[in-house]
Length: 105
Image (cartoon, rainbow, N blue to C red; front, side, top):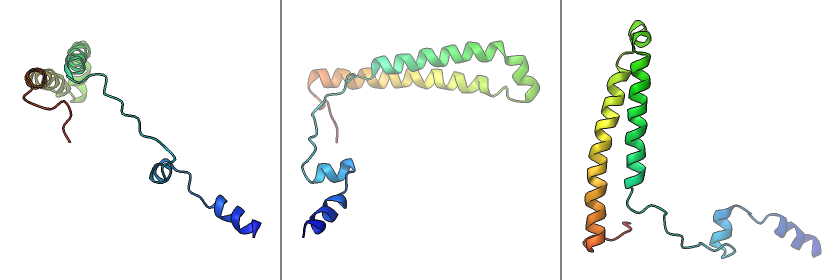
């Protein structure tokens, strides 16, 4: 009888999903650090600008290898970052005004 109990205990799944389903784990309600997304998008814009400068430095090398298109990739990333910044600012303003919820499911 004791052997059966030990066998059933050893077969118990210990992955987090199973533990959560059995109520052994608690899910903490932690709010995200950055609700607006604006600092993240600004960081991305700066990163693409730095990448543009680096690609400009190595432009002759890239041209020899036929990879000069990377210059336009950085320009596109930089431009799309500005579009993303406009979107995040508009979204954050709507959240602050109470027109949109902070979390969307």
